Amino acid sequence: MKLTTIRDASALLAWRKSSYSDNGEGGCIEVSDGHPAGVPVRDSKAPHGPAVVFEADAWSSFVTAVKAGEFTV
Figure 1 (cartoon, rainbow, N blue to C red):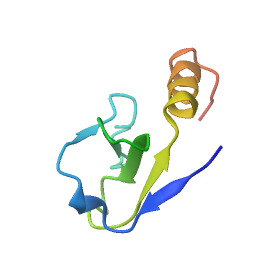
Figure 2 (cartoon, rainbow, N blue to C red; figure 1 turned 180 degrees about the horizontal axis):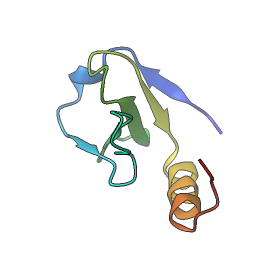
Figure 3 (cartoon, one colour; figure 1 turned 90 degrees about the vertical axis):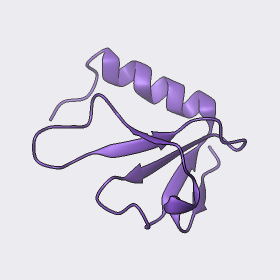
Figure 4 (spheres, rainbow, N blue to C red; figure 1 turned 90 degrees about the horizontal axis):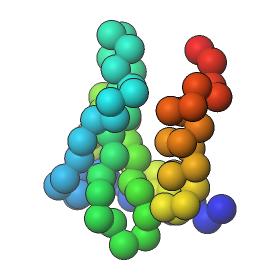
């Protein structure tokens, strides 16, 4: 899996919070749709920080596993 990063994630305008990430403690991730290299992911508490761009297939596999309950807290 090839990972790229975006140094200042605020350069991308269309961010949305993951519906699975708000645990009431401020631990949210945000994703941006439509990026040509894949799916950018950032920490919502650091909007000007970096974002990691995952390949679309890898992100899709991760989301499927989360929805299936394959990860525990």
